Length: 186
Image (cartoon, rainbow, N blue to C red; front, side, top):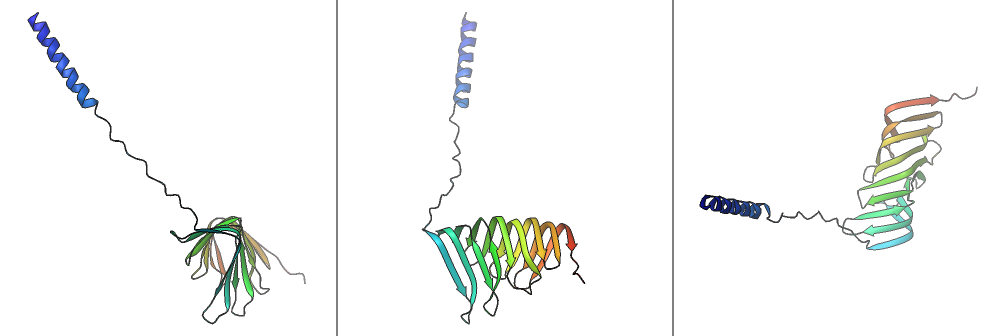
């Protein structure tokens, strides 16, 4: 019995040691905290005007509803409208969407039913439609990675992706583009 008691005692001590090693509390990794910013102010029927160095109206932003977040210098907008004016003060472009984000002084992102209207008669593009568009406010570059439909005076074209510049009136469809050209009646 001495041997059995000794073997049972050693087995008990080994089991107790294993239990102590395996029973250590697992270090819990706290989930990353999401920061929820509260807007510093909200506005209804917001209108923001931007002028150039000579005092001419350059840009106009409108929004049905806007939330401004000072900590991240961002404005969430509902039904934003962006007007770009030419050097004579005439509205040249109107960009509209169902929702948008304005990163103060940098760029704007427009989402859902984005429409760009060329407001001048001599412009080559009368209308662009897409679901997503980025606008660089510093150099007026626009880009999209979604399907784009473009309508001009004598053409209609569709494609995937867009790169262009509002001031230069330059637009390029990047992939899978096809066009229909209209002849004037003679």
